[in-house]
Image (cartoon, rainbow, N blue to C red; front, side, top):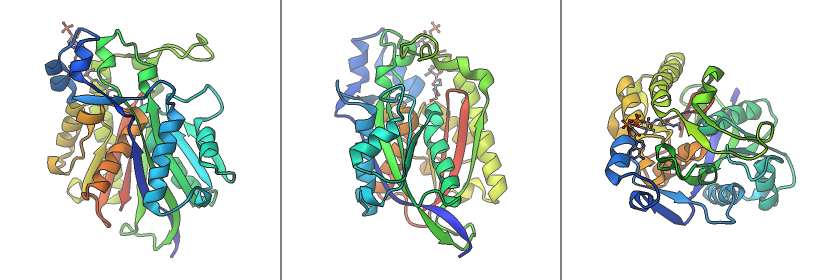
Length: 325
Ligand code: UT7
């Protein structure tokens, strides 16, 4: 019992009720179901109701994760929300979530790494757990991208959706081997030279309004496959695992073609890749925990399995994390 590991105690998610199909979008912009499915793999996505905020989605996912863990809000001493669509410019949505859950101890903050937000959050929370700053943390990815889309831009509005996913991480003393349960290793990267290839054209310090998402899709696509394969290769080399050792690959769900190309580059068996992009679209920081929740609760991910999480998004930011379930 020599090292502290961050072990996943529970997983939960929440999707808003409204489902927007590709057919619905053909009535809003000049697009077709065939184009969206062929270029992205997306068939439908969820959209938050008027008056339903990122913090509401996050709270619903957090409650589901707590129930899954058999814990209550009183057991939590850290709340982290990964989001690019906070309720307000400040305070952190995590404090609103903490308040709505009735948690009055510990600390709370947001992480802004866009689509990589959940991988950034789980990795930094792991470091804080290891440093003794928290014992049980709620790590949430929650987004309402429908609020920052330009609904007249067919190149972007068909790709994104709303949702939230959450995990409860708990500090557990472990032997310190790669057979331990919990987060075994992670790598985070950023390259700010590319910020303008995927960004929102507003903000408190520039325009004073939230703004709309702008993306050079082809550029993002190209960098995504290269960057994701590179960071996963680093993680495998560092831990001594091979692609064949991974039981479940839980990628960011931006585009089916990016997922397929990355899997192929790394030699990952397609049967081990968790896919939700067809049903959720790209939910940014919520996409990885939403996919994880699906694979855990349909029985695919089992105790002892090796699970690789990865994501890439605006900044550019990217990263990967390896968890023993
Ligand atoms: O979460 C991380 C961030 N995001 C991503 O990872 C997304 C990365 N990029 C992508 O997924 C892809 O680049 C897209 C799905 C965005 C686009 O696919 P593409 O194969 O790169 O298409 P494109 O942007 O080069 O567009 C091809 C054509 C264009 O027409 P022309 O110029 O060839 O005549 C577009 O105007 O498709 C047209 N187009 C559409 N047509 C029908 C663009 N959007 C649509 C649309 N419906 N919704």
